[in-house]
Length: 185
Image (cartoon, rainbow, N blue to C red; front, side, top):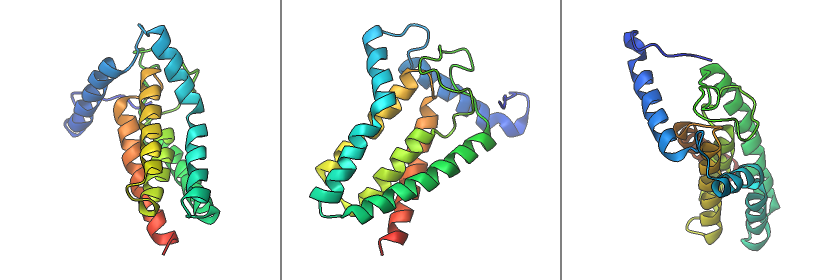
């Protein structure tokens, strides 16, 4: 994992980023003092939030008239972005809260780098893709709520820093919108 030195002038923005991320994590993450109910909820959401997301996508495919072909294209885009996000994360090499000793590894996650969050990137891709299909839809609001809940859960459980999640959501939403614009024309 890459460590940042405050003595290198070129690293100053990264050191500030890391300080901000740690402050946000101390506010949002469970750290070493997890509340049992909140941790149980976070673990369940972190592991199972894909189920309501898939359900919402099926509503889009059947109930909203977008069709299963649009859902399939969205899932293809999300898969491609997932692969790219994992490669980007390995290249950047920023650690996770539990690897920095800020939290136990509540999710039993691998210690590979976590910026950007691949979960957030994939969910952001689905959200960005469907945003062009379903502007102002209650289904889209459900997708956004699922994405935000998953982001909170992964931060609370120590798998990610908050900026890992925010960057993943932003990157994924942008990529999803680009894919939708290209594929759905």
